[in-house]
Length: 252
Image (cartoon, rainbow, N blue to C red; front, top):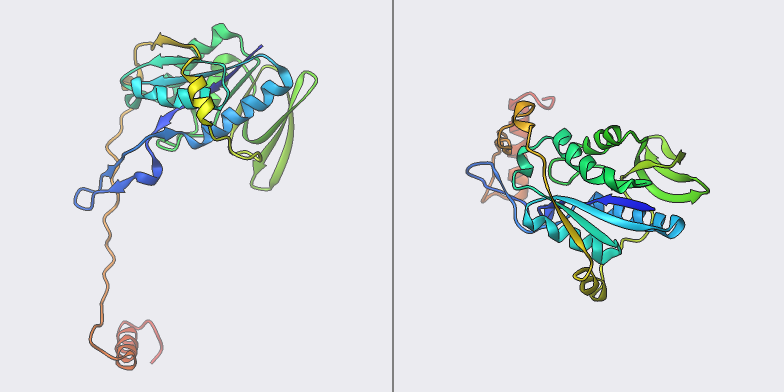
């Protein structure tokens, strides 16, 4: 039995800075997508119940292998790297098609992936992949369990928690986890280097015919303020009240 989990390498969201002059984002560092880390946990939990192997799959340039290595260090058995240098230029359906092509030969009983990526946040790859694989999907999953030939899933909804039972095969889209986060140990990182990783070529990109976008920029601040300096608290308060009355923001 195969359990597939998708992982993505993203910039470190805690290291993003905005250039004040241009409004563009400066990214640095790298990390596994936060929702994908929960997906790995759910895949490993299902392996305990169902048996089989957990296969981690990623797509991107050479640096994307870091996320794959982390998944292997967390406990995945082997990995698949879909090599592409134009990942940012591809739309979600293009990415889902590449994942479907790599996953279909594995005949997985469960496919796990994160609800969305920390960088693009489209949230579309999961449902699109499920459609391409002709599998049902359950989103916003917080906890997983198994009962016979069905998986028991706890979803996080606006109205509270929802319990869902789904037959195999199924696509599990993880929103978070009720379990404690798994942090790779040094032993796990060393073991990850010995686990097999298969490299496959990506299909030609079709994203240019369906999608265009501009570079995101932070909006300029238009608010203005008045700073009162060299005044006592009493005099500063009088200035404030006078200004509020002048602009008819308080009654005279």
